[in-house]
Length: 516
Image 1 (cartoon, rainbow, N blue to C red):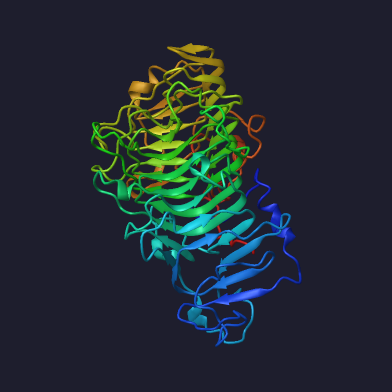
Image 2 (tube, rainbow, N blue to C red):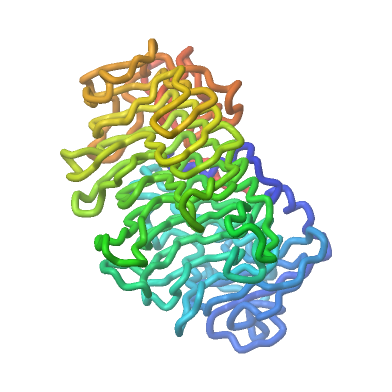
């Protein structure tokens, strides 16, 4: 099962705060078209939209239908959570007035111009669409099925100009930051920009000002200029009265991202550079794992450009944990990045960077004319601590900028330590000859079950990778829950080959349902 909902150990305390829900908390019922005022049941008392003011500790069930934008601004009360979740046949609270037809996608959008469809000006929220398709398929089809998500944030009318979902205004105003927010099982559909018009420069998810304890989980974020825009606590302007958060403990996991936008006009003063994540300015304990990243255009997948100025230092970032992800392309008219998978520039890191067990497949000139690099391109005055680039698998991809183990400088870039080894190169000969790692793997064979169908399961074990548990203990499973190191081999790439039965066939990957 490619789209397993297994939630592995997480760095975020925001998941743990679910325990703060009181057994005496009230439940409220939201049903499109309803005219009730108390939200007390699914019948005549149901409310037609989320109330402007929500109650701390309570749960708000939302039925299928269309709803307006919402500003989450409810004053904090300690760490007491507010939960907003899709109603399902299995979990919908009261039976009074319930109809099974109420299970279905709840769609939120702006009817007129707005800054964001969901905007967070307070803390401690769990926004939970509860489900997406659980077919035993793969992320290329299963995770990118818009209709399969319990919640949808829809900006196809381009009325949300700044972001589809936002929290923490950073330098733009109060509140500068927010914290302890989980958003999961949501289709985030952007403005579908196709030309240089500022109105359509929407980020999918934009949290600034050092917002912290954030979990983005089981989402489909697509058709905007950057799926994620995350800025930490580094104050480039040396004062100004801003109060920033720590920018710590942010996780992006089990997310599909597809079809972002980058400005094609280099002369525009407001040119926007696309990426999967424009993330910088002091993000610490930042985790990007188990994601499916497809058809990204612009600077890079992870773009560390400063949002506040050049030669600012943009720090102090790290540690960062980037593992178990897939980067691929399927649209030859919508691809090409300039600086690869990971592009820190004008950046300072106070913690190490771990780029482990990622699969980079079909990202190259044969599928994507104009691709320049597919790995790691630090530039300008970047200062890095330890960088660990291990167990990554390349297949039919363009040249990777290899910075071999032991390097401490690269142009104006400095490293405390660089470890580059145990990477596999399948039909990617240009980069393979540059890699001097003693454990590199070079092969002209095809490693996957069905790469043309975007099935990147392994046909057989790769050469043994490094056991990285000591570096990142949570890199002990792949996105399907397969334990790394089974049958004596710690496979390279995003997927561990499933153990075989006595018949020689892979064990079945059962659908693991999410618990609530």
